[in-house]
Structure formats: structure tokens, C-alpha cells
Image (cartoon, rainbow over all chains, first blue to last red):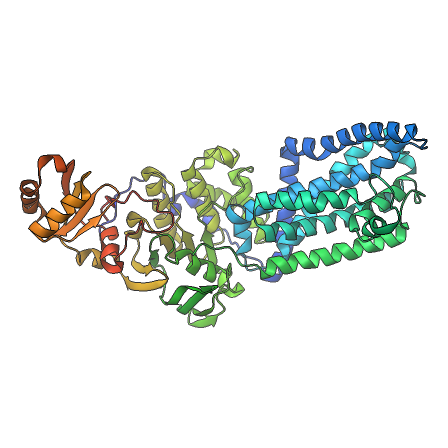
Length: 288
Length: 315
């Protein structure tokens, strides 16, 4: 049949390709491809980190504003009722945890659209395991959090933190494990909810209350709230950061540093496994 | 592929779909939105698990959507699978990176792909500045970056204007000529279907027929009478009762197949009062008309019809 005549708008591939089309390219085996996909997704997140300046405002500046306003306000209120100590200093580890939470939330929110009509579509049909999507995203978000928190620590002396006295290995261990767990958990939620509006709802109802119950703003009390805080993985992130900022031990923390890091490692492993399972078992919401 | 079936809850959305794709062939899945085209592609890509399917690749049984099949695939999705915050070059590099292609081979391949897309001069601009047609061309060369033997395209020209449509298909034809790959394209655009070697006509999840587009057209009446009117019921009644025509509704008015349109048009004008007709014309039948004849429904009858309904582009 006669096809619709088309104007030749560029040279045909055979002519334009030149030596480039003759170059030998061999795809990696599905097993090795997992590593390449993880690395590529990490690299993509780093590109976004460097280019999207508005992200920095949302993730770093907003928590610091909260820290200043709530810290000064609550400090005044506590002093009025006879409280002692520096509330700005107490609150600072919680603000760092908030930066980690915001980084994980904003980065995983993009997964929803990305999967339906963006870059992740091509990753979903690669022959490699879809576990690579979770691991690549977790690696990217965790690196973002490390960079953003490291920069935020420049203002830590305003909260009375002695940067030379910080137990940095403990600090980064808590940061990395906590962020990996939060990212994986948020990834699973984003994947299952599969709508940006729904994800906002989950964040408001689940993640923000978890942060409030993390010991960021007040210590664990007795009764149900104390138990809720002990069962909250984010509380161990705050405790780990609090211990590390105090040089290895803080009397204000609700749990021991070693126990807290163990819990963070366990929850990171469980949430990552959950996210991998969620993605691997998922079927696309294909239109019929 | 044989016996592809899928069920959502109580609803059977694919019924024993079967077809073959020969090496180098372009096969179209033609049907309105909701006919099951995308579900067929999703099952083969591993994005959903079908209720049943027998798939063979080069004579060897493979799992539908399994890694053996996916390793041979390139996929163009309905929405371009690119990161618009990045440049075209960065997107292509990431695609190759994921397949383990680095260094000099990666750079050479990226230049080739950019040349194929005709976008070397825009390679370092963020893709959010690209038009829909440019996004499509980059998405297309991305899909063939690893020289797949089978390219899947899900409504690849959806939302594109005529010039972009032609440019994308020129590129598809050139890539196919250069690589020898087979193409499976889901579409509801008659002009897109006309570019296929064979069509799998789908309606409500069932294969109506598998034939070359030319043979579908050949079965049609010689002409289609096109009437634009604000008085559909009266005009339809007159055409059916007075002239014995089978009339169907279109978005713009009515149409009717006929054998000698140039003679019939005079009879129609005589039979109808002048004020009942806004315009009358004749055209050659299209694949949209053939689909109506085969399925008893229009390509626009789906859940999100996007074509103009006229099917005016003659294959």
C-alpha cells in the first residue's frame, strides 16, 4: 500500500550514524545490570540535587526556621514554668531528623509520577531485578540527606554543639541507617498509594506524627506515649543523633546508642526488604 | 503469542488473544481506548501478570514479561520515559549506563542516537524545553539504544500534530531499515495503523481479525459520503428510507458507505431540503471505516477518544 509521503527531515540513520553505529555495545547480564541500575539511579538523584535549588530551601531552610521559632518560643515557655536547660540545643537533633524525613518524603513523592509517566517506566521493563529500583533510590536519597545534613551542621554551634566533640562515626551511622529506613518505608507507601494527593495524606497522618513522637520535641514520658515513642523507629534516629552530638552519650536520649543503632539497622533492613517485595510483586496499573 | 487472557476482578479484559510478529515486521494493535491494546503490551513487558499466556520467542517458549523477553525489548511508552529535568544527552547516557555501557562506546552511541533523532544541536538543553515531537524522538532513540530485536510502542504519536507524527514515523521507518527490528505498535489512529505491515484488530479484548491494512480497506465500499448537519435524525431517516443507505453517526455529523459517491451526492441533495445540510462531500474509506465495519463500533468509542473522528488521512 502507498504510505503517506513524508518529507525527509534529517539524514537516515545509516548515513548519519557513521562509526558510532558500528561501535560494539553489549548489554550487561540481568545480574550485573542490578548494580548498574543502582548506580544510574543514584547518579540521577545527584544530578537533581545539584540542579534543584528550591529543594534545598524546602528541605533545609524550613526545618531551620522551625528550629529557631519553636526553639525560642518553647524555651521561653519552659523558662516561665521553671524549666532549666537550653531548649534550642535539645531541639536541634530533632530538626536534623526532620531534614532527613523531608528529604525522604520529597524524593520518594517523585516516584509516583515517575513510575506512571516518567523515567522509571524504562527501568521497570529492564531485564534486571526491580530490587535495583529500591536500592538505587535509597542510595540516592541517603546521599542527599548526608550532604544536606552535613551542611546544616554548620549552624550546629548555635545550638551549643561542639563540632570537634561530635562523635562523627556514630552521627553518620545513625543518619545513614535512619535515612535508609525512612526512604524505604516512604518508597513502599508511595508505591502502594500511587497518587500524589493520597501520599500527602499519608505523610500528614503517619509520618509527621511519627516525627512528633520521636523525642524531637520532648522526652519520652510514661504511659501510652512512652510506649509509642519506644516503638517508633524515628525515635532511635533522634537518639542516635543526640548521643553523637553530645560526643557519644547524652542523658537526654531515651535509649542507649548501641541499642538505638541496632534498631535502626534492623528497621532499615526490614523496610528495604518490604519495599523490594512491594515493587517486585507490583503490577502496573495498566489501562485496559 | 497464543492464548493471552487477562481478568480484572470479574471483568475479562483479554480473551485468548493470539498473533505473531515476524522478524522486521511492523504489527499494529488497532482498537479504541479500552479495547485491550495496552494490556497486551503490559503483559508482554512484565508490567502485569496475565491470567494465561503462551509466548514463544524465536521458537522457544518464554515467560510472558520474563527477563528473557525483556532483554530483547525496547519500549516507547505513551508518555515519554525521560527525565525532563535533565538534558537529552544525559538521558541517553543514563539509559546506556543502566545497561553497563560506559566510556568511549557510550559517547559514540549517544552521538549516533542524537543524530538519529536529529537533535545534536539541542543535546545539552534540559528536555523540559523540548516540544512533544522532540521528546518523542529522543524517547524513540532511547528505546532502541541497545539495538532491541523487538520494539514496543504504545500510542507513540498520541497528542502530536501532523508534522511531528510524520517525523516520528519517518524515524521509526529509518530505524527499522537500519536495524531490522520488529515493531509492535498499539494505536487508535488510522493513519498510524496504515503504516503497519499487518494489523491485529482488537475490540473489547478480542481479536477481530489479523490482516494487512490494505486488505481491510479493499473490502470497503468505494466511497464514503460525509454529511455535516444539525438535523441528524431527519437526515438519517431520509437517507435510510429514500436511498437505502446504512448511516452511521460521526462527531461532525453522519456518514454512509456507497459505491458511486459522485452520482449519489446528487440524489442526496435532491432528497433533502437545503436547510437540513451544512455540507456534503465524498472521501475514500479509511481504516476507521474498516474498523466500524468489522467491530460494529468506532475507534472513537473508547474511554478517551482522541482522534477527530473523520479519519481523513488516507492510508
